[in-house]
Image 1 (spheres, rainbow, N blue to C red):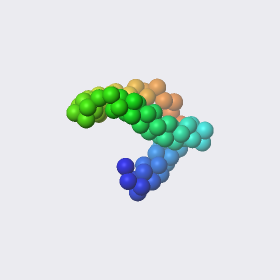
Image 2: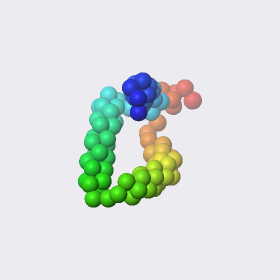
Image 3: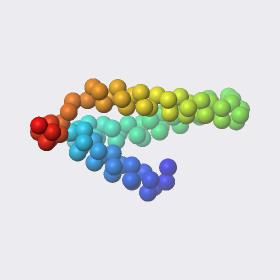
Image 4: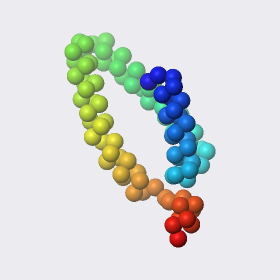
Length: 95
């Protein structure tokens, strides 16, 4: 991801979490902490697997993980949205 893309994602994520989900600063900070931790864990795992496997295996594995992620993301989003407490500002405006 390029630098402007990362900035756009970071800006949009904090706005959406604060305004639409009613998240506090601690939750937003935890989510931003998860980005680099996930990147480091993925790089570590990729390095460990890649040292013993071929490029073809790594390419296929990356494709399988990507497809699995694309399949799981909508289900996880729906589950999270159904369990997320509604913010008071949204409830008061809809009443």
